[in-house]
View 1 (cartoon, rainbow, N blue to C red):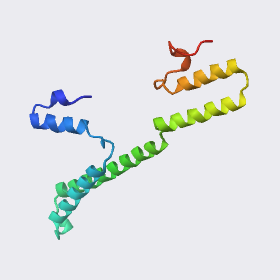
View 2 (view 1 turned 135 degrees about the horizontal axis):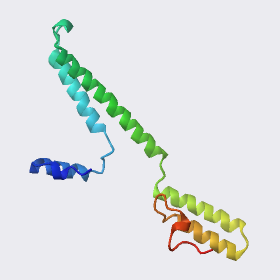
View 3 (view 1 turned 60 degrees about the vertical axis):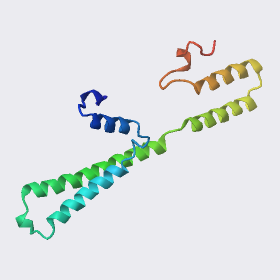
View 4 (view 1 turned 90 degrees about the horizontal axis):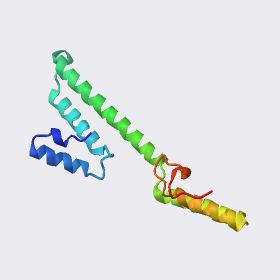
Length: 141
């Protein structure tokens, strides 16, 4: 969802647009640091206050902040795990080239070799979820 239309303040719209252009949008390090800073500031403000003197609102605030830090850390760990499990375009290209080279080494029939090479090379430019036979410019049977 694009929230830009709902932000009436020019300053907020500009801040929102800047964040949308942020290349590190999946990196939650700053948010974790900020949440931890707020938690520490809240605890510092409470200082040596006896637990029995704390309001339920103060305790709830600290609990929410601590939970928020935990949630952000979990989210960042999931993003990092997904990033490690995903293939870059360069990785995919390298694997495709290795497959193509193996086919060229072991397939001796030029006609079959050309069909396989064409189809394998075409896999690199498929859109996510697209199958080679669905392409209008795909290999011919």
